[in-house]
Length: 201
Image (cartoon, rainbow, N blue to C red; front, side):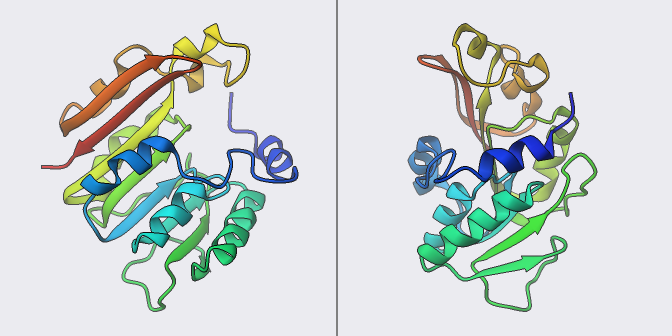
């Protein structure tokens, strides 16, 4: 089942922020371990994680297919005093001083630049063909922060239902086995979720 842009546009058009304005708790927890520099937020939604990292001093690229989601990100950045800029592609180094760069792109056909980012993060999004390219986008000693739903989510009434968007047991760890795994967990407490922090060699 392909990503339904209209469905997410409609969801993001609702009042308020669908996932809230605060960053994911896992991102907040691992922040002290992350290297400084440039970050890439894939499937960034309404921008809660991208804006959070920008406020911590990172230069962040937020890549999202939904234009509405990126517009909400821009509004949140403005509210938080984060300088924001729209771009058509991921191009480094930047010729402007934006803390946050918004890129509208379909990750199913998007090419990630090689060895450009200190941090790559991805939350509540699973596109399996993209996974092998995430370590390649990181600089040496760069870190990947990844958290998304597992099949255990089917035990609960809400959340994604399609197995296409749900991790198998151990799948996330296996996908990044060539990296140094600093933290990994799979929990089923109110939701089924796998969380990973890994570092490039």
